[in-house]
Image (cartoon, rainbow, N blue to C red; front, top):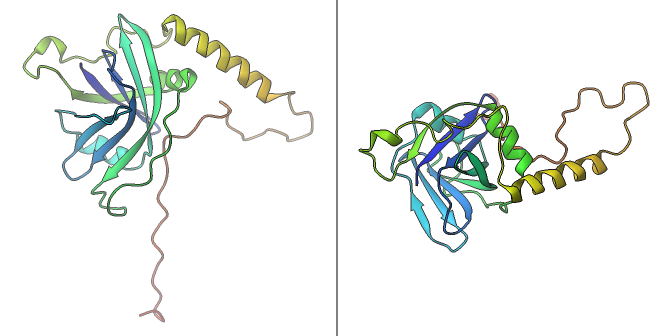
Length: 204
């Protein structure tokens, strides 16, 4: 299996794979010191990626707490998930890693993510010496018109119907709804660390 790590301009991150997992991905661990990514599966097995994360991308991963995970086979998206990202040896955070959230599934969220991707790198290759797989996993996919496997196409339709029902009638009052962001219900994949408090002379 070959896996790429992708980023959007907003710093949202995800993994795209060219083969199905034997067990669903339940979470991802990023060791900031070793630049090492490890996948954790629902059956409690793990897989270490064999390509270290580049410095610029590693910095973005330290601000993320969730990852998109997608499987693309025969130029069609076969599986999508949103899984927690846990940090080890984070120089700006606490020791260990934060309490993980639950994995979830949203075809629409993965679609938006993949269309917004602007950079990335190879993260795992079955054969590091095989130059025929050195290119991007999504190289043959038309991201402007994504193709989904039948079960995901049905799920996407259900999600769109649910979003319309949840949106309700359009606001009619003056100024209502201005400045909001669309995509109701989407869970952000980025967080910002609070600035450290400044010390005063009295505290010194």
